[in-house]
Length: 330
Ligand SMILES: NC(=O)c1ccc[n+]([C@@H]2O[C@H](COP(=O)([O-])OP(=O)(O)OC[C@H]3O[C@@H](n4cnc5c(N)ncnc54)[C@H](O)[C@@H]3O)[C@@H](O)[C@H]2O)c1
Image 1 (tube, protein in one colour):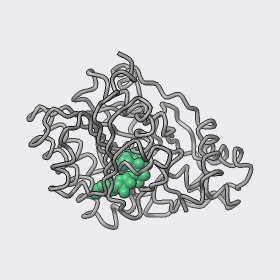
Image 2 (image 1 turned 90 degrees about the vertical axis):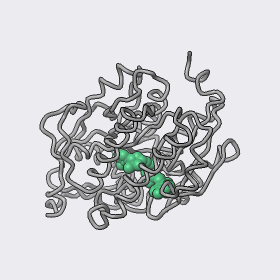
Image 3 (image 1 turned 180 degrees about the vertical axis):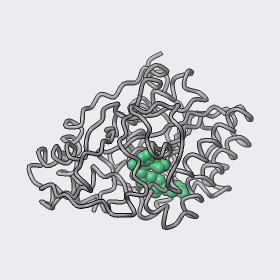
Image 4 (image 1 turned 90 degrees about the horizontal axis):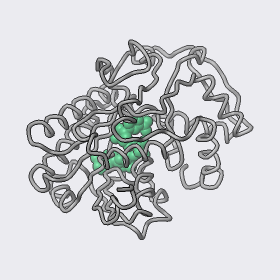
């Protein structure tokens, strides 16, 4: 069965659906005829933006609710086939300032969704959006799912605890789950107001404003940047594939790029912006993970998914989007 046939009439709930990743998944499912409901609490300073669904607003329901709200989620999870659970506190730096809020959203909030599913819709498939930060300091690249998990921030710890909870609901309660550990996503529909997360997007904004792009150290640190369209396709492919159920997957581009290369690529595409090097701030050194490149072979094998977008093309598409729409994001 092709993806279009699968998704026609599927009842899909996307939590955090007004954010970058959730709204991109929604935009891809609308043409397939999926029956979509978005849930989002529109909490500052995260990425909720109604403009993200501007062109598809009439093709879905939008519910302003919090995944921690037991009564709201009880009703919202019902009569859904697939739940993409993207709602989250996304800044690992903020999680160090307010670990309680992070735990409340990224652990308790997700526990609430799972418990509502168990009680009111146990046949639904639920997909979790974890992070590559769950691995902590990297021992060797590319990083497979078997790499030890040694999270170094409350954000990464709560994502790991939530992942374990998803696994518990799978093994003990028989709920269908898929768990992702996502590398560094970027692209259209991301918030552009601050640098708390989505570094590539923030650097694109700075470059477009002709400001310097500041790099810690010599810029040799390697990251794996995944274009949001490729990431959304990964979610959609995994949800269709029986082989993905009950499994954890690392999701990234599979390509390592240094900070220096990434910033130079942005400056080249934008045609503005200079790169500036400063020493590592002490509080960043403590949580730095070292180089990170995703081993994507498990997800590729299980779902047939492959990333399609190299960094330069992804940055070019992102820059084109914000050249048109920046005022909607700042
Ligand atoms: N962007 C990244 O760098 C990154 C990397 C790895 C994993 N992730 C995870 O992917 C998910 C989506 O991230 P994104 O990049 O689209 O970020 P985003 O900020 O664009 O979207 C997150 C959305 O969740 C909503 N939200 C937050 N708390 C909520 C709550 N309690 N109830 C309902 N809605 C709530 C926000 O309002 C926002 O619209 C998050 O869970 C995030 O942790 C993101």
